[in-house]
Length: 119
Image (cartoon, rainbow, N blue to C red; front, side):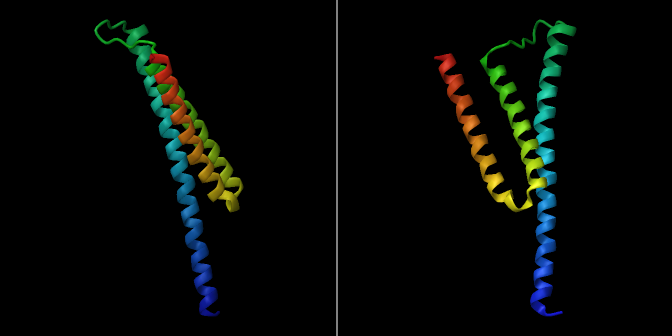
């Protein structure tokens, strides 16, 4: 086999390793957002409703609403990106850029909604 074919084969193996790392990282990121949401809601329910602790006050305000919406949408978008990259390996760069842009738009929208609500 020529040196060119060997280099090309080695490069293809390295790219598939990077793809598998990307997919694993996206799965971990989506799970992290999901666990943060579940943990926050679990602590809220336990402290407010089960234990009825009065000196720790979890209020239902715009901050908690924004946090819940952001973590849920980030988790859903990350899991969606992971599934799309698994199915369409050749479009992964376009999908990843679209995901970054959508996350940015959601964050900006959340900041503006929070600012308008407080104003």
